[in-house]
Length: 118
Image: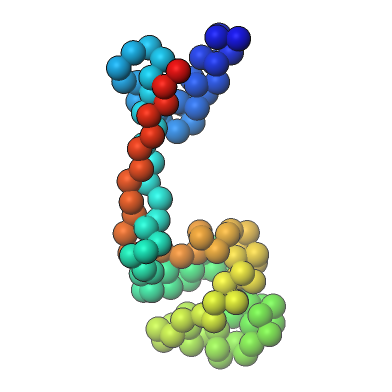
């Protein structure tokens, strides 16, 4: 049983870049996640979405048809600085094969740390 736990921890370490500390059985896990309380970087979000659309090769008309809006509306939020209606982020995420969280760019990220003790 003890060897199985060590094997699982080693897999976690390689997957999450865990650093060893203290003793043989203690580990620290560090990661960053969006600080949702700080808000959304609208310009960076718009740029990320536009880059994803370009990489996927989607056209304004195809996006508009799927969202039930006009191609002019898509062009407006892509090129003139207006932003998507929130409900359409789900549709766009589905078209791009990503989650809504992957589309959004937070203003800041927060660092998290957990100590795993055995």
